[in-house]
Length: 431
Ligand code: GDP
Ligand code: IMO
Ligand code: MG
Image (cartoon, rainbow, N blue to C red):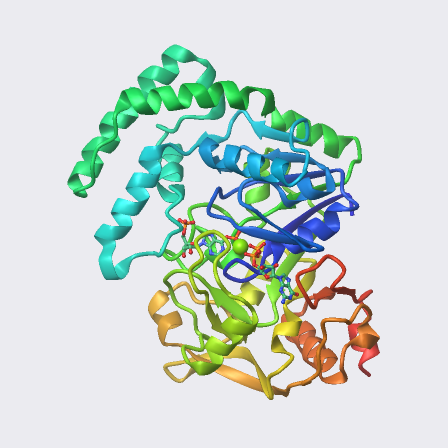
C-alpha cells in the first residue's frame, strides 16, 4: 500500500480517524488535503481519547504529518490543537508541516459563516460555524490570504485591509457587528511568527516522498456525500471531500493513489440539514444515537441516524474509485432484532439505483429495504472473521455484494484493537 487515501463514504463521521490511526502504524506520512476545523476525527488509544480537527490522525503514531494546500487553516484552532496534544504527551513539533499555499481562516470568515446561517433561517445548511464556506469562497474569488502571504508584510497588510472593509460591509447587511482591522492585523502578525517553523513547500515534500517510494496516506475530512460537486448540494461542505480532491488539495498527480479505502458505518448518520432518505426520525433512530453515542465531535450536536443506504454509498464508491471498504460501528447494531439495508429508492413509480442530483427527488424518495435478522450477540471482542456471529457475517456479506466492493476491515469498537481484518474472505467464510 504505497500511496493510499481514506475517505468517508457517507455524510461524515464514519470513523475515518480510527481507520487512519490504525493504518498510520504502517505509513510514513499522513496528509490532509481538504476541509478545515469543521472536521472532528476521534481516535481512542486505551483510556485516552483524542479529537483531531486540523492535524492528520497519523500524529498519534508520530508520523510525518502534512496539512496540504487544499485545507483552510484557522491558526487559532491549530495552536489550541497542538497545545492539547502536547499536554497529552504527543510530540507535534518537527512532525507537523503546513503548506505555504494553504488559505487562512480569519475571524471575519467565522463571523460571516454564523451571520449567513442566521440569515438563512429555516433554510440553514447547519454548518459547523468554523468559517469554512466563506474562506473557500474567498479562495475561489481570489481574495483569500494564504500562509505564504503572511510573510510579505506590504501585500498582507493591504489585502487584509481590503478584506476587512469588504467583510464589514457584508456583515453590516446581515446585521452583524464589524471587526476592527487593527485587531485582526495584530492577531495575524502574531500567528505568522508562531506558524513559521511549520511552514513548508509541502507540494515538493509530498511528491518527494511518493517518488522515494515511501508510504503516503491521504486523509479526507467529511464524507463523499458532503462533497461540493458530488454531494447533496447545497447541503454540503465547500470542498472536494471525496478522493477527487487529493490531486488539487495536495499537489500530487491524479492517479498516484493506488488504494482508496472508503469508510462507512454499518448504518448511516448525518449532522446538519439536507436530505437523508433512510433517516429514522423516531424512537429507533434515537436508540441508535444513544448506543452509538452519535453526537458531533466538533459541535456536540446530536447526529441524525438511519439505516445503511447502498444507493448513497455506491455513489461514493464510484466518485472516489473506492477499492476497499472499512465498515465501522458494527457493535452498535448488536442489540437490534431486525437490521435493514436500503437497496434502491422509489420515486414517482420508478426505482432509482443511482444517487439523484435533484434534492426534491432525494427528499421524497422512499427507500426500498431488505431486512436481515439481528445477531443479538456482542461483537466488541471479535478480532477475526470467525469471531463474528453468522448473522453479522451474513449482513456484511450482503453489503459487500450490493456495494460491489470488497470489505477489508470491520470495526467493532472505538479502540485500535477492536478491528477485524477480513483478508477478503467474507464471501467464502460465510458459505
Ligand atoms: P470521523 O470524523 O470519520 O473520524 O468520525 P468521528 O470521530 O466523528 O465519529 C466516529 C465515532 O465513533 C468516534 O467517537 C469513534 O471513537 C467511534 N467509533 C469508531 N469506530 C467505532 C466502532 O467500531 N464502534 C464504536 N462503538 N465506536 C466507534
Ligand atoms: P468529519 O471529518 C459530519 C457538515 C455540517 C453541515 C455541512 C456544512 O468529522 O467527518 P461546514 O461547516 O463544512 O460548512 O458545514 O457539512 N459537516 C460535517 N458533518 N462530519 C464532518 O466532518 C463535517 N464537516 C462538516 O454539519 O451539514
Ligand atoms: Mg467526525
